[in-house]
Length: 126
Image 1 (cartoon, rainbow, N blue to C red):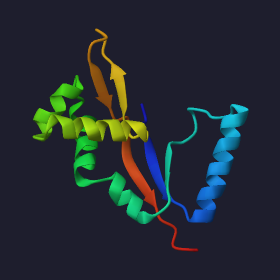
Image 2 (cartoon, rainbow, N blue to C red):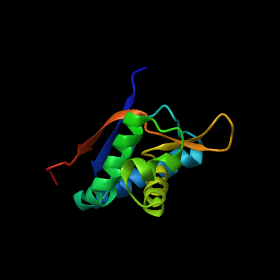
Image 3 (cartoon, helix red, strand yellow):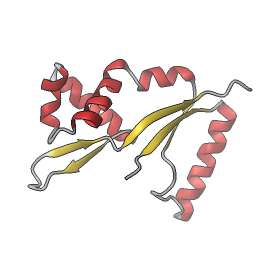
């Protein structure tokens, strides 16, 4: 299975506003589709640094490579506090950079990163 990649795009204020208007129109008309390429839109290049901290990138990498059977394994693997790992998991799930799937026994949550790379686009034109 070819895994999707995620694109992070920086838009200026006008482009960002246009993007939000198109998004609201799609939501209003029911045209939002899971088959659309996964994109994360940000307003400034600095936002990328706030989103993709060193620890969050490491967390994504560990989930992608180790495929843990539950979120409770991650603090031990990463040698981080459980509360910090859970905070990063919640944030990354909220912006769509990872999924938390239910285990077969419906007790545990399994973190999933189903893409190979993050591509960052920073336009150099106004």
